[in-house]
Image 1 (tube, helix red, strand yellow):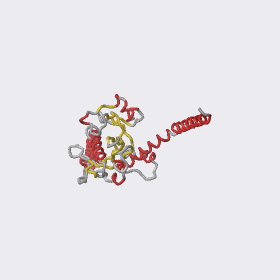
Image 2 (spheres, helix red, strand yellow):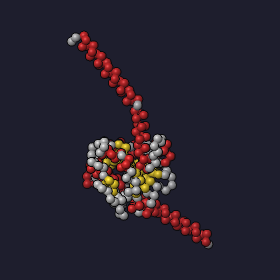
Image 3 (tube, helix red, strand yellow):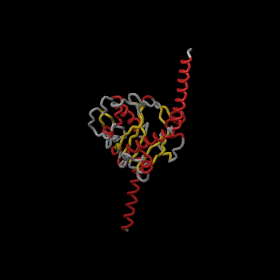
Image 4 (cartoon, one colour):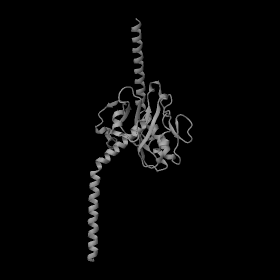
Length: 277
């Protein structure tokens, strides 16, 4: 081998090694910042779904000021309190740990998930007092990817019955759908079609759907040229708002609010009688 060739080879190897070290160092050094940015974007998605996002705002501060996260057991649908640091609330870890997830029967797996975590986190607005909005995590298969997002529900009148529950917003923070087609789930014009749509019929059956030429209060126009992604959105809403997802929790919330309203009315009537006497 000629000396020039050996020198060229040495230079190339040295350059590759230096570049590898630089890239690896940057990846490790910037990992913390990347995780912070991911969390900020996720919080922004929650705020957008709830209609609380302010363009140019600080996601962390807006989230802290307006939203409270609550751990929820999806098996018995009881809140698990405010301690969300436990691994059982890490969805990615839960889906790898057989103790923290359960397999979804094939006939019920309309969203194409295979497994569902036992513990999850939901978000309420406002932080204290009667709940006006609930922001629920959703995910499901589209055409090319699993879409991760949030649906916000207006539950201010939930004690009046299931037909009083409306969508407050829908956002996605992670997916791999085709830009300009299924990727239009990020389009603000399409997302603006969701607020005010009804969710359940009088029997708590999920009725909301993405449909071609939407005509009813339960339907939102399909994405043009993205039938499978549109169907995926319908399917994940059916799963997460139904009996296998948050449906039983919402029904418990409705009964609790109705009971609270009844107690308040009883106390008010008693107070009036006391004044008259």
